Each structure stands twice: as C-alpha cells, then as structure tokens.
Length: 293
Image (cartoon, rainbow, N blue to C red; front, side, top):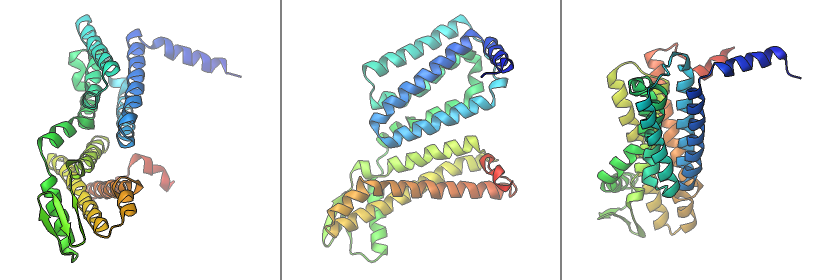
C-alpha cells in the first residue's frame, strides 16, 4: 500500500519537470538502448565498453544535474533535432561500424543543443570528451598508423630474450619448428585503444592534478597495452612452433585472449590507483569509503 505522502512527493517532482527535459530524457534513453543493441553485434568487448561509457556519462550528469542550465532556443532545438534524426535514420538504414563509432558524439551534440543551446556545450565538456574517446581515436590511429612491424620486432625480442632461436621475415616470426604471420588485426591496436578508453574514464571520474599527469597517463596505458599484446603474439609463435593448434585457438580467439585483456586492465588500474595514493595518501575512492566502517 503506497503512502499518500510519497505519492504527492513523486507527483510534485514529476510536475516540476519541464516538457523539454522529459523529451530529452526520453530521447537519451532511446538512443542508449538503440546504440547498445547495435554494438552487441560487433562484439562483446565493444558492447561492454559502451555500457561502461554510458554509465560514466549518466553518473557525471547526475552529479551536476542541479547546476545545469537547461535553456535553449528554437534554432538550436531544431538543429539538435535534425542531428538526432539524421543519426537515427543512418543507424536504421546502414548501421556501419564506422558510423556507429561517431553516432554517440553526434547524438550528444544534438541533445545538448536541444537542452541547453550552443552556449551550454561547455557544461558537458567531460561527457563530450568521453564520447570522443569511446571509438573515434580507433579510426584515426588504427587506419593511419600501422604498428604491426613494431609488434613483430617486440615479440621477436621477447622470444630471443627467453632463449628461442627466432628470426623475422617481413611480418613473419620464424622459429625452427614453425612460423606465424602477424596481421594488422593482431598488431595490438584493440588492446591499446581499450586501455586508452580506460585512462580517459579514470582521468575524468578520478582526476589527477597537473597537466603532465593527464598527458602521461594515457601514454602509459597505451604502452601497457602494447607490451601485453607483444607477449600474447610471442605466445602465439611458441604454440605454433609446438604444433598445438588447440591451445593456439584458445589463446588467439578463445577465452584465453580475454585473460591478456584482463591483465592489461588490472595493471593499468593498479598503476592509476598508485598515482592517486601518491598524490594524496589519504585519498580513498568513493566506492571504497564504506569498507572501513
């Protein structure tokens, strides 16, 4: 049985919401649902990153909701609605992987124009940064810069360091009993850019003081991703030389590949947490404060 007092309180809060706020809230919910339903078709990893970024953005907006200036004009509202409409039409007609990476940022710009006008863009700087780093750097970096040769050389150095007789022929890592061809998809960009995403989330949710740290942290995270992938490629070469196809498939495309991702995420998270402790030894992450009680 509901309390009349609670019902009146809920109705009062609901009635205080402006029509444009309700409209924006509905559009946000719909866009997130559509985007998640499309990303899951491009792999579980991208889907999980989408959930993480969506939660981070909703958390940021929830933290400052009382300080947001929600006021727009007819021009910005129509422009924002046009951007959202174009995005939805494109996603329905041709939900390509490329456009899927740009659509969250375009939709967010449209929503901000509808809710707060162009002058309100600065209120959502953190959210826009998150949406930019969700997928856009992948297209610019992975297609513009080929790091496959660096991955081959680093994996070869690892094998040489551990005593294997190994040589390089192009993109082939050659061992006495077998060889592997390192394709562009195995260069490590997926791991590197996943950790770049993570670094941006950390820097925004748990900011560090100083511009140098904000520059160095993403570079360190990307370096960790490169090193982890180098060890993964070296392991692939060893398994190929050992003629162990079942183990190769497990570590290449099976659950074993997720272990390397988890190692990268764990090392990066630990590195960032140590930075927080070094900056302020008494600092505790919000969700850890209750553990001491």
